Length: 366
Image 1 (cartoon, one colour):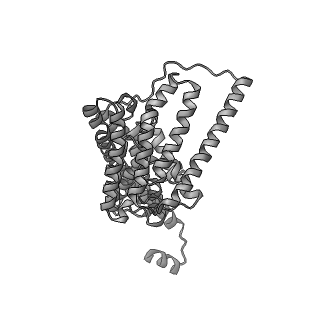
Image 2: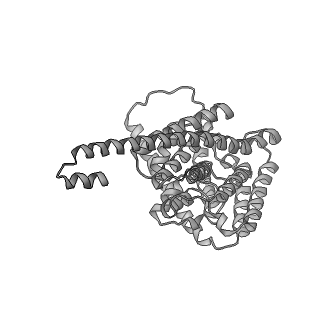
Image 3: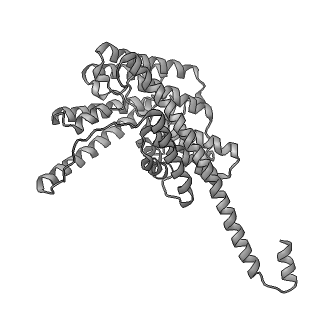
């Protein structure tokens, strides 16, 4: 400012000074990008380690004590399937009864709320609750997924690093995106999907200045996951044949789209009805989930857990159309009841509900 005033008093111009200021701003921008890239890489490393731990907590007990993967519940006896689901609901109800109300908020909607109304400040203890409660639910075969849990854990890690580095708001948002992308990439070993998820689901837009740190976080997290978990081969597709466009194919696609729309409407309507019972005791709501899951565990064990085993059977052609349709309907309703009654888990679709229907994070209270 002193130099500017001196030039103005002497009647000089500011062209040279403006040029130097532009270069100075560019240099600061490059410095900021370098810092964010380094922090993004660190966030990816830590996200990969955290997701490897999450994976180990979920899958290793099942492999050593049950002798099967968590998603292969149909290989277990009826007693094991029912016992696991009921025990998981009882343990979750016990945990949430003893926890303060503020620690009940978990999942994608909670991350979005904290990002938009609290500058991305995510309490550590909510992340701890998300880690262990989601692990209990997945081990017990409850119809939930790893997506929401991974998002919450990665975002919490990114927000913690941003707070320790004392970054401004755009830096906090960048590291939140890095944490989300790293966690999704590590738990599913899909680096590109992690980047797209962070931009499209959490931030709902692409921001150019976030790209490099988020890419670094996603790639590094995937490498850590490959090293610690070993490459995951969830689906096995023997051969892919080219699709021949015909009238029959068009009709089949039309019926498929119509069926998906009807299932989505069923899922949404069931969720909206169940939200009205959020004021009931956690013991009542989780008992209903336990009873429904136990009933399904007897007759439709393929719908338990994340459902990857069922998807593998579909891709290999081992399910007939009638069984597949019934399985999809039961899975849709069971997931709607499980999440709608407050069991902590996670689904990407809940983020859409948050924006479309004004569903606050209080809906994730249990």
